[in-house]
Length: 200
Ligand SMILES: Nc1nc2c(ncn2[C@@H]2O[C@H](COP(=O)(O)OP(=O)(O)O)[C@@H](O)[C@H]2O)c(=O)[nH]1
Ligand SMILES: [Mg+2]
Image 1 (tube, rainbow, N blue to C red):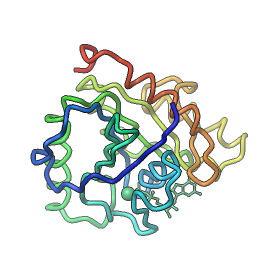
Image 2 (tube, rainbow, N blue to C red):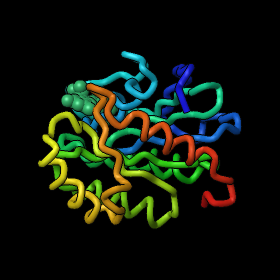
Image 3 (cartoon, rainbow, N blue to C red):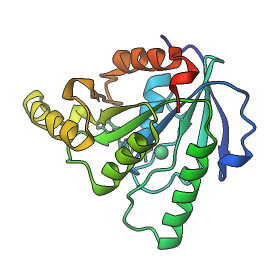
């Protein structure tokens, strides 16, 4: 698959209000600052399609992008930002619940984790949620450019063990040099081709 067109559709504070149009969806989930928006820009070869930020905890909305007029890419609000109030954490939880319970066209979740760190408790909770609800997902290890080959070789098995996937299933990704982009596009193409019956 190649991405030929990518456009911003809308930002939603509540997923229930998205009319949807029956297109399949691929969602991007992960900690604040893990590189969700950067990955979307890298995938779409667009500099500013999704707004990136050096300050974590900025994306409080569900951002919807239309790709190739064929599917929606969903930038979910990040979790795990320490400086948020209990109330904000609750509203994040409500938004995610609303999204996952109304996303009948969701084909695949890209769960982004930082390749440099052992998964946080929030990462493990997200992983357990995806497993528990039977959502097909891939683990994408972001910021791969920040590690040497050797360091990476040591980290991938740790990530895999914590997130109950095989090390070779994880896609190391760099939004800086687009490493991992072809593999991720292939993974997305396969996910989009899955029959709906397999999506719980
Ligand atoms: N070196 C490097 N930095 C990255 C990469 N992806 C994201 N970043 C940086 O990490 C910060 C957060 O990225 P952003 O995409 O806004 O994260 P989000 O909160 O998950 O959407 C920004 O300063 C990005 O420039 C990457 O692959 N490599
Ligand atoms: Mg973002």
